[in-house]
Length: 584
Image 1 (cartoon, one colour):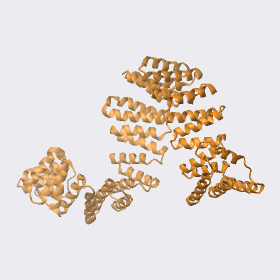
Image 2 (cartoon, helix red, strand yellow; image 1 turned 180 degrees about the horizontal axis):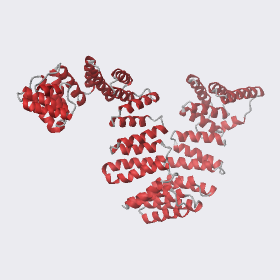
Image 3 (tube, rainbow, N blue to C red; image 1 turned 180 degrees about the vertical axis):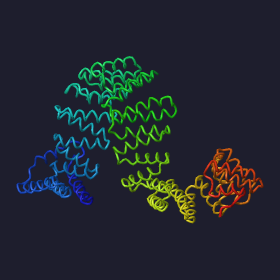
């Protein structure tokens, strides 16, 4: 629909409206009533009917622009007929121009207040636009003209309620009840009104009426029990729950309510017993169960004594819903938090078998492969995930890391570069990509590219301790830019003190700078903080000691390094020659 056309239509309507006295009064004026009775000439009537027929035809086929044009013509031919205004109101509604639609609807209603559809259209438009007082007035007029239509009384009551006139609304709801008898929607609405006003006694009466009318409907008992609980009458609430079991002993929602009831009373075992029964029922939807398990996930962070119960429920969820991916994934989340990575991975693998199109499940699966250092699986499964989600950059990070660990450096670089190009607006992820590229480029012998990647990572986060350590260590191995290396390594140790690896890096940079005494201080700190069985650290310690003229101690530490494993390829030669041999 073109806006300019409808703007013209509405202008035409205003012009017509101004010629109609009493258009804003809510009912036709005497002059208007006289005009309504006035007939068109035969020729004009034929023209009117022809245009009206075309308007209806265009509306039916969805050509609203043409329909609107025709209806506007009709208002010019005879501004006393309401139907064109009503139809134009509908078109303006479809266009989202509710103010104009309301004016058109009001005009149609004023011209023919006895027309049910004109009144309903106007009243509902007023309600939609939060003009509840006016809507209540329209529906009241309609109710008086249509006393046999309870649905209008319901709209009237709802409008009164929204207008804040709760007493008047309740009176109208009572009228509806006299017309149609006890009705769920009416009783529930009244109960909500009474509850909101703090009149729990009246709210209880309403629900009890529903129970008398529908004694086998369990949900009403549940509402009644909740009302008793809100009133502090726990024993009466329990009586109501027991009444449900008389005709619906396996109702899972009642078991949930009873679980809450006993939980509040501090009877933990009884509470969990009812929760288990609820979880064992297929009628309780899986989303409700997942929400409960998520609350357990939070609670068990602070109260680990509930972990056993949480695991029972998670396993039960799988038993009852074996075809639901979320059953396996939430169990996997609990296992993952407990560092049971192998079993957690099994659960996430089952989840992706059922539901392959959930990215978050694949992400968890790849994280678990990383934790397990199963880079073969990470490589295969990241490739699978990329096929499904080619625009998710994090998948390329997993793939790149996996290929790097498999020493497929060119492929790793390709994946990481691709992931970097896909990363927009996520600086922490981009930082990770550059960090990983720095590592892989170095392993591939592309030292300049490695330095560039590390620098880009540090531009995003100057406090990335991993990059500060690795970058500085690799510079020291190349005996390049040692001042910058020392500065970065020192910073990493300040940010993460007492890390054996970081202390070793700083010691080694000091060694490369010829500061052997300082190097010894830091390498000994590394040994104290977990490096005593690390072959690289022990070998470095031996090298430092040799430079400090302690060859016996140097040899002793080289031998320890050989036993620990992980030393350099010239370690054996140092031991054999009993002297320091620098790597060329």
